[in-house]
Image (tube, rainbow, N blue to C red; front, side, top):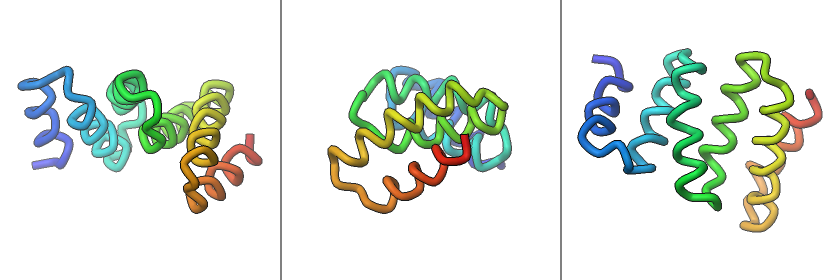
Length: 101
């Protein structure tokens, strides 16, 4: 069973749970399903506006789908959170990702 299938079952039972939606989005991303992952990652970012990780993955999905402006916005918002929260490694990754756009 694919990892995303396990999280899909959790989302079906509790679709308003942002952690389940993030986990499903992350699993879909890891399985190469960027487009399918976006919906769940967007939900997670809207549910918890100070949650940096869904924003980073959302930006990566958008970049994989050639949505460069959307990716720039997601990475920019994630960078602001990384700076505000003192996350140095994500900050460096985000600066590198933004430099490619």
